[in-house]
Image (cartoon, rainbow, N blue to C red; front, side, top):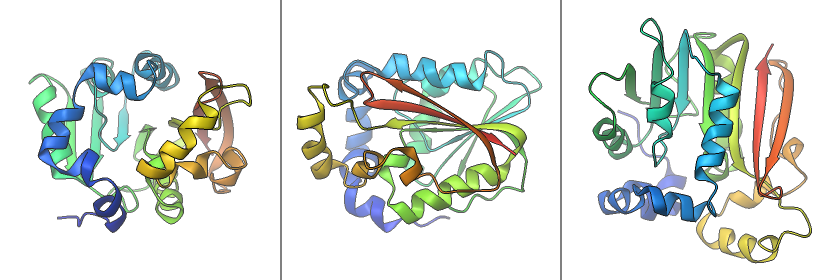
Length: 224
């Protein structure tokens, strides 16, 4: 049994840990509202990077409110495997309730900073709005683990916040809000991706795409 990280208990009890919070936020319209109407678009961006069909093994690191995991599972062929890990049992149980009985999904409680998996066992991995929820040290370990478990030539797909362009009206009102409810999110605003994506010999390539005036980003890392 994995212990709940202290940063989660201290900062995200209201969003992910309390059963009442899970019931509250597991609403498509609310998830979309939180992302300023971009949930579907960003989910599409993640799916486009992962691929139209997902043979082999696909890993989602941390559960996601909404239907993204169901959409991924629908792309996994009969001989493929989709695995979702999360450190919170309540989140895994919420996902179980959403998935159809025939879905080819393996669910396990694991800490993203110390995955219980061998090296190079996954063809691709997804981190959807996880990076901004972790302090720098946990974020670095999570990324290192994602790169470790993905096979050479495979992809690590990251979708998360970014710094909006200077003309974006939300740039000047959203950051103070994030400081209150998402204390680590500002890290993704400072200095661009290079400031929080650690250098690693396992990264053979990186592609970055911006969305919604730069407020969101998709980063695709190719494992060397």
